[in-house]
Image (cartoon, rainbow, N blue to C red; front, side, top):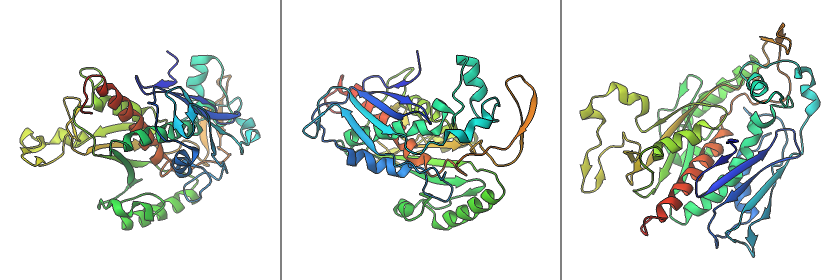
Length: 353
């Protein structure tokens, strides 16, 4: 098990490194006859693309996707779809001084322990650069979901200690952080600016909403939909926690408070997050991810070198102040991939999905 392939029916394998020739994805199991071109994929990639200022890395990657296979006359053929995104602005020499040093908070030491070798140029396969391939594949899954009127939308609900108190999804595209609370978004921007001056980084919380998900998706017992979503989202490098519906808040509720009453018009509340017994119930799917602060900081940190000698290090290179908002399309992509896979699984046992 190499761990680079996701999904059971709608299967995606990603490949490539941060400072390699390219990153990309191969999709197997996508149904034929779906209209697809680079434009649809590019829209999502542009949202993840580095170099947009603010909290983002100044690395200037065009992230232009190329479809290498699986398309004929503008439609999918049912054969593997290969997507490539060539790296154009990799400055590998910026990492030469880190060749023999383990960066705190990064996967340098664990990759070396596992493989006996590591790519020190920006983190190689462990770099957030890998997520470009996920977003490209997720854009294809999004098109499949759109045929079933299923939409996936992610947005920022917290940055550092600032939390959104409003949930107005109509305003998320009017601010760079995709926050549903404009007042909180302004405070977050101020916090980002100050944190950048301090040479530090920020974490936050992203919420993902799925509208029009049909009831019945999810495979009991060990491949429940909430388990699949949690696994998909936790596979994103910066994510350190996932909750569905009320999540951890459910631990402080009583059963009478946490249960969602059923009515003739549907569920009266949604503490379940749209999933019961691991199967979607037709309500809005709600999940959240806790995003850790970017570990590459300008402040001096203590670490060790390859010989286990203590050293101090300041991380140079080009890095984000926060994974938010660039992680938002990545979260959407992983949810899209999960739902596309489970939708196609359900089609094998039901004609209603």
